[in-house]
Amino acid sequence: MSNLQANDPVGISFWLISMAMVAATVFFLIERDRVSGKWKTSLTVAGLVTLIAAVHYFYMRDVWVATGETPTVYRYIDWLLTVPLLIIEFYLILSAITKVPIGVFQRLLAGSLIMLVAGFMGEAGYMDVTLGFIIGMAGWIWVLYEIFAGEASQINAASANAICQKAYSSMKWLVSIGWAIYPVGYFLGYMNGAVDDATLNGIYNIADLWNKIAFGLVIWAAAVADSSE
Ligand SMILES: *C/C=C(C)/C=C/C=C(C)/C=C/C1=C(C)CCCC1(C)C
Image 1: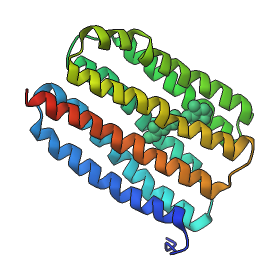
Image 2: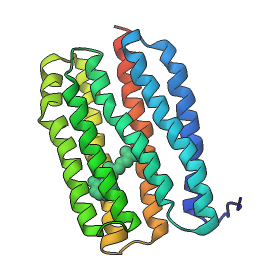
Image 3: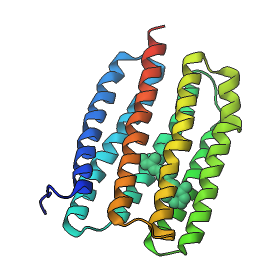
Image 4: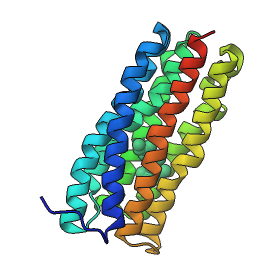
């Protein structure tokens, strides 16, 4: 194991985020006790997301500190596990309130998998980077369509209570604005070459902090508010 150096801000961000993910995991899993039964699964899943990310961050920090290279494989294994878990939260919070057809979950899952597989193939050199980007964008847009205009959004508008709708709305903006950071990083890092590995990893790290911990906190806040009604 190589040691972290004081002049390596990206390495330090890997370290800090590892700890934030550990702390968030403990928080979500303990807070699960405070919320009513129908919200518990949502908090369990929020805790699993940060737990999986914490472990990947330990390994990614090591790769970065030892080689100064982008830990692409660990990064994508993390995303492959955590993105479906994040996306299932839309299904879970709506299911806490009303009945949701499984097709909603299947479409969200399919869209996010297309996005990730294409992105990985582009970043790892198995596919043309531009083609990987275009297919990846198409998968993401499909997810956005489902949550902004598709069946998930219609169920939310028609059946969810005010607390759930507020959480849905914050989550929707995280998946659009928060998630947009990744394709921007990919574009700048691999397509126009404007940023180096350090900047790319710095961008991905900040995005993960936001999209995993803040996302979980939105769900936690809704769960606590709804449970005390
Ligand atoms: C916790 C990790 C998260 C929320 C990761 C999200 C990743 C993305 C939204 C990636 C998106 C990409 C595209 C939309 C185009 C192709 C390249 C990707 C995979 C970076």
